[in-house]
Length: 164
Image 1 (cartoon, helix red, strand yellow):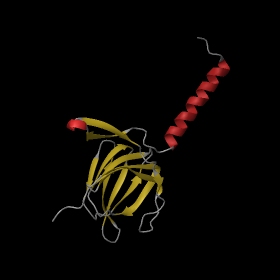
Image 2 (cartoon, one colour; image 1 turned 120 degrees about the vertical axis):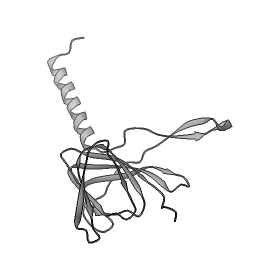
Image 3 (cartoon, one colour; image 1 turned 45 degrees about the horizontal axis):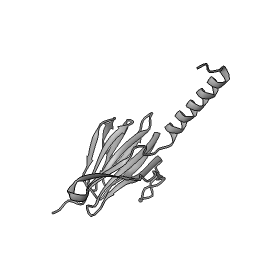
Image 4 (cartoon, one colour; image 1 turned 90 degrees about the horizontal axis):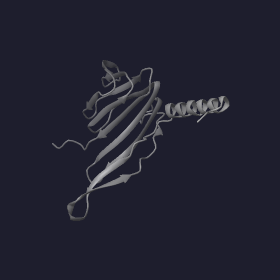
């Protein structure tokens, strides 16, 4: 097969456009499969649709985020457990906030600084995060994110409240 020069330029432009789109549009490209007990208690895989990530311009406390998109991938019925997906643009940030429930975060890509904050919001420590890190948040721990030079992609699992 021989490709003419003008066809090659078109292919290169199309490929470059796909790379730009893939790099700028946060999404969950993978499938979500829930393994359930089927007939005779045999396991079956049920594919679920992923919801799109939504922009989160401000936190509930009114503090501004920059380039933060977040969404639920799966809500485990009856278990108060949610699988979440997040994206923060290069040089983006997530304002200082806390969560009422335990949360486990897995860093897929990106690196930056996770601030640890006191009750007044002042920084009292920090963690440098990178791909493959796992960060476990206890309930009501104030923290914020300052992302580095590449997009920060993460998977989070929100757990039910601890039993006393």
